[in-house]
Length: 89
Image (cartoon, rainbow, N blue to C red; front, top):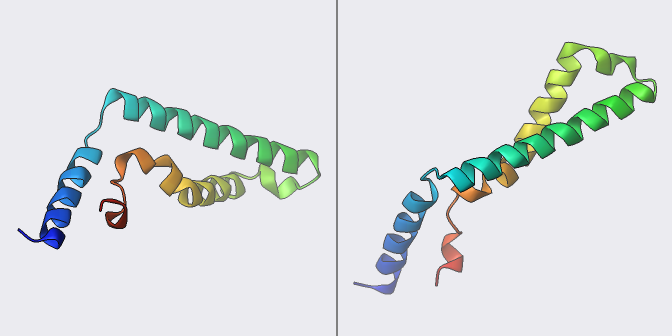
């Protein structure tokens, strides 16, 4: 078996192992999500305190939480992603 084939097999094995949910991974994800929501809530509260009244609307808050989640997705889900293939060899 060649070196490249062996690396691909190792990557598939690590990817399959990384996707398995464990209690530790789930608790870590919940903690990260809590931190993200807390930070975004403080930012929204600071914006409202600064006089940005449009932040009081449901749609503005939904958009901020949605954009924050999309931007933080890789950080949130990092425990469920395998290491990059170039770091294996």
